[in-house]
Length: 412
Image (cartoon, rainbow, N blue to C red; front, top):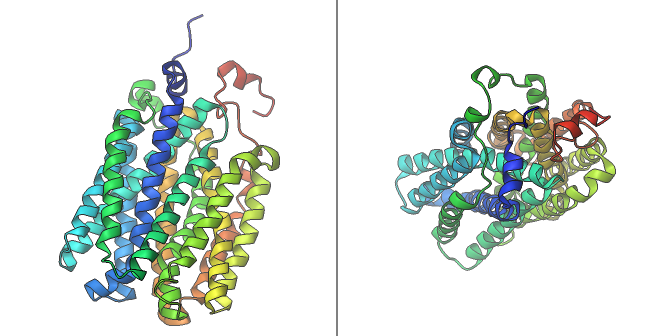
């Protein structure tokens, strides 16, 4: 009997580089979180700098969402041919180019084009970092995605607090953009060598096998990701604007709603890897959804700075749990196609971003930016219909077990 074909997880273990790859992938998650936080918390400054209003901001965010979906497609195409390591380094490089264009202080048409380019990099990194996270998790044989996404969140908090400090110090917004640029370039160059190696799908599978994807599972998990990012993009894009322009928070205090939201996401994600084997996916998702629905309704009903900050914080529970748990479950649907599956599930991220950022922004005039947060509450409540699709615990394939182990697992 011939030996089974090598997989990317066995390649990682054979090369003895899971720890190095884990550190590098963690850095990529952090770079993504820092860059995104810097961009969204700088929106009030960009509004003044470019002389635009909330409607124009909504249109720019829509463009970012559309180009980010394109970026996820790019990540899939590159990963299939060259591996997700190459796709991740490419995405970070594209983001760095966008930050450089924003720093140039161009007139509005070029400024908008820079945001479109940033969207491509954003989508490429979102998809490729999740591919890499699932790969490293499989090599370790235990849940790691919560910790990886926690690195994203910790860096996003740092970015929000940095933006707050820059606003309080009357420094130009270009300062925080320059920090994001330097981080993106550094991680891209280092990661090109240190990200997890894998066998590209083009080499691992016959052409007829590459299109055999679990489409029902992709749609189910994609809808969960959509709901999570309705919340995430809504809070990320509009929490600072809402606190500053609609409930009268001071300039230095306005980014704190986003910081509180990210802090709760951080705690949730740090706990996810530990709680998942004990509580199971279904119970964790159900509890997280209920708590965050309450948080969104608090923002919608109580137009007070303290209530808004508390509501944004509670909204972070679902995002903290749903995103790593869902991407982990998606990677288990068919480990041989995990890069392709994750790229497709990730596209739902940007449909959620359109609803969470653009639609909420368009509702700012009526019924108001606060009441518009009923929308993410409804999206989260719909997740409860999909909870039965989740396995209670991780499969043998996700834990890095071999084919014989998987076949003997009674849960399969």
